Image (tube, rainbow, N blue to C red):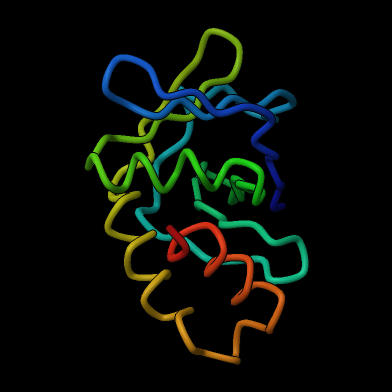
Length: 125
């Protein structure tokens, strides 16, 4: 079974980016970071993958939080997911995001809307 977890708030604090989500179906102490990211072109979201013994959790980071991702990437800060009292570091987040950004630039395979949205946030000063 796979689940989507939607990031509802993002906050840069204590030299890291905190992504907040409710409705995480398992305690974060029971998840393992997969150190891999995808994109959801239809939802205009970056997706970080977490794993448990029996499922994957897809942490969906919608476009509204991308400015925080840009700042975090520029400062090389770690990214953490928090839900309730639990938290887990999204390991290799910066490397994965940087890799995706370079692949999306000028690449129509991701869809025109995603490519434009990424350009508007990450490459327009």
